[in-house]
Length: 313
Image: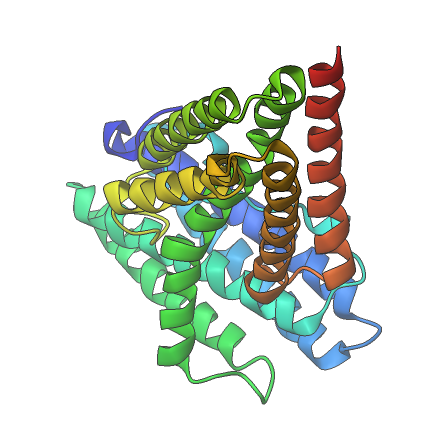
């Protein structure tokens, strides 16, 4: 992956063309998915798709005038700093509120991209076009906010988006990794040794090691300039701390001298951790309770059983 700062103006324009093509197709998918239940909103997304096509044509005209007909294929996944998007075709039926939130995040990210790119550009024509597109993408974001009458106050919605991006997402990623990935080594050690001290040491090593690893991985994932995900070191700190906390929760019960009591308490803590993770996914990630519980609990149980089976070998 390339860093955004390393891109030339030609590469920035090529990336912008790719982004507009992708966004236009996503809006077309939104319109198709909402047509039956929300025809009026589906028509709004068709209009937004047409406007995204217009942006692409303006970018193509400027690119040809500056650099000719060959456009290198540069996609969002080739550049650090973009948030991954779940394919729309995997999420059916589409809910209006979930679609509106997704559209808001798309436009927020794209407008930030254009603002950052405009500041970087030295060519007057390129700078002007990127600045104009940034303003038009902000208007799209406001259209998405107004898509339903119950849309929350824009300032409050913006604060909530930032909280989810900068705190909830890195914290949830860390908590899931710490709670689930440390189950196998901890309980393998517990059932293999029946020694609380050795089990505790394995749990501490796995939890703190995972916390350091996840913290660095999150901090290095992107600089937050395009995504609005905040300072890298803060995200890394949140992710690393939650990873370590997730593992320590079921390691610390082995401070209790009695092995059976410690193990029962550790298993109880694991159950609470998995329910908390499912609740966070339901509360902030628009995941249904049934889906969140199934994904988290089934995964946790499989990892737990893996550790128990290895420990009994």
